[in-house]
Length: 205
Image 1 (cartoon, rainbow, N blue to C red):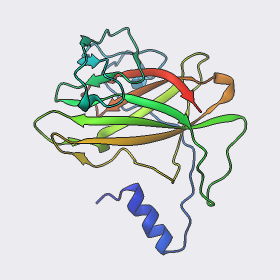
Image 2 (image 1 turned 180 degrees about the vertical axis):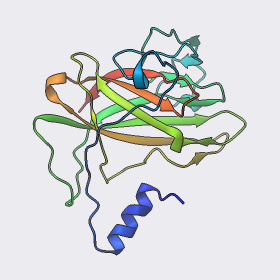
Image 3 (image 1 turned 90 degrees about the vertical axis):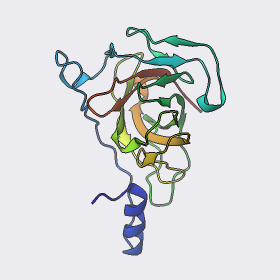
Image 4 (image 1 turned 30 degrees about the horizontal axis):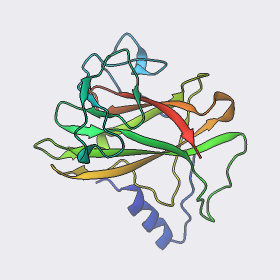
């Protein structure tokens, strides 16, 4: 049995135990590029690219011109990647997070603490398991890898199933040292058998 993050928070609250956010380093589980251990950055792109569409933050509502993703090309924030089974995702933004709860530590002045938003749309014929999706986030200008975090307010973790015809916004929180700059690369991984699109953009706010 698995317990989602929101349910875990409820259980801890009932036991009068606070849910503390922590920072952890993410490890890739991708096996599509055995010549590069863990398929980690700086710049690995899958040759099994599907389609990327220049359709902004809400792909379900747009029918903009599409193009085939170049394996050597990063996908800009706001543009959509489509896996072969019909699950679509753009990274819509990465924004400085400031809405901390009383249980959370204040922002570290030496780091950018941010929340990335991913907009999923399932145009396929079967439900998609979003629990299979994870990210690796790193600096795109001056190297550096972001640590994973979990901010409570407004969180929509990468979990659950997405039925055909349904859209959902999910969040992924991170922390990166300011010396690496605001420009980041977000690699969206999906299990071990799907391509891992790479989105590039800047932390705003």
